Image (tube, rainbow, N blue to C red; front, side, top):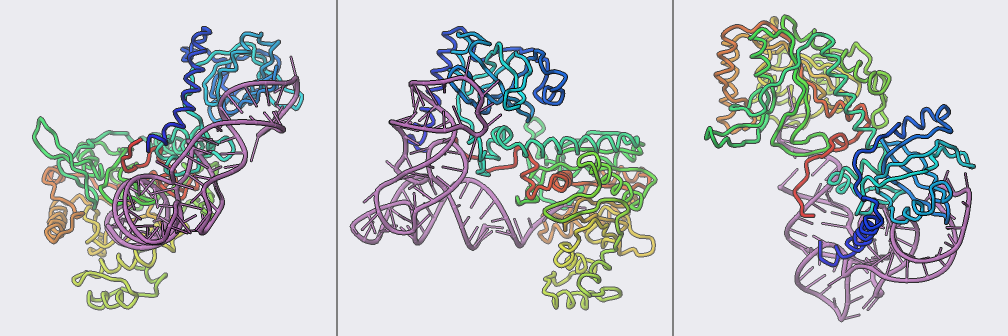
Length: 491
RNA sequence: GUGCCCGUGGCGCAACGGUAGCGCAAAGGACUUUUAAUCCUUAGGUUGUGGGUUCGAAUCCCACCGGGCACACCA
């Protein structure tokens, strides 16, 4: 910003600074302290009939001021609700009334007065006394059109929250979603645990990690890309039902569906398998949707989506056949690569059948999966932590539920054979050697844990942000993150 | 990272080659039941930054900064 640019806003601030000074001179502290409220604005509105005629003390931010000589109307906003303040000179006295002159839109005030209805029927508080709790020195965005500039909305989310009521609702829904997930799991006797966020080896997912450095230990640490390998160590340790709800960090591109840090819940249950986890998943989604939206049928961007269990189970190879007509059953890698090429899907020269199917699925099938469906039977090459299917060792007992074409979660029967796991890691290391920076790293410490014996278990990871997007009909992940990642910028 | 689009007073918008206008907010005034209050008056912008083309640039061109979307990347 140029200096000229700041002169104007400084003029507006100067006016308010002057009011602040005059308030102080008049003995009105511009930044009050404790204010004992009898009700929130929402409570007054909800219990208006019983409260009418009684005195209340409410507090909040002034959103509008309509001065009309010896009477002034203001709208007080608190908790997303608004009530009108009705100020009359002969109710509050000349001195207090005159001092209203120094109030501005945006100021936070506490008032005392009688609950009443104006002649036009507007629910109001007729103010007898008021105090200033915080003087606002900067102007609020426009009262009617709100704040539209997306960049400002993200960078100054507090303004967005003050002036755009729907935004507040989204974050309340987010909070309810997280609370519902936690309740669903703890009600089923899952133990909530916290595992390290700083990892010596970033494992549990295919992703590029953020690297940081520990001074005292003189070592690099990675921000976790998944808690998976630590949670499985807990299965070894005898915690049969655990979950962790928290942040993962991936050093990758940003999009409407990706933020560098995002919230995930991972769940593990011993002596279960992928089938059980699919049931748990659909039950959890239905429960959360019910808790947050009141039902299991929701509308996302004009699509009606029915989350009511059970959801269809569809092996990946069948999904590919259904949506592309390509049947990869019993094909050789050469044949498979040729089939993909004919559909315009590029695959590496040495791609296995499984890799080809996965690629075709990603390119041509995902977008069709609007209603909830579990895609199952993932190729072993792309599932290094999942158990093989007994009757088809090239496939794993893994699933991903798709909704709106997005991967909403990922789950599988956990691989608990340490010998097979070591071979899978070695395969991943080969991929790394070929330049795949997202391939898994060898984790000897994790293998040692497996060698002690991990009970068979089902595991599940859910992308919480995408779930919130779905439940709040938000088109971008930034709409459900209070402070989405932004490039640094000078004020 | 690539492509397309966007950046005008605090906020929401207009002007799209002729030298910047409106609404809200702000300041002064009138008004004791308004509610996008109303009415009168006033102030506020070298149009993201830096170059260029032109007699003349908010407008056209280039670069940079910031943002959005799509693609890529990515569970």
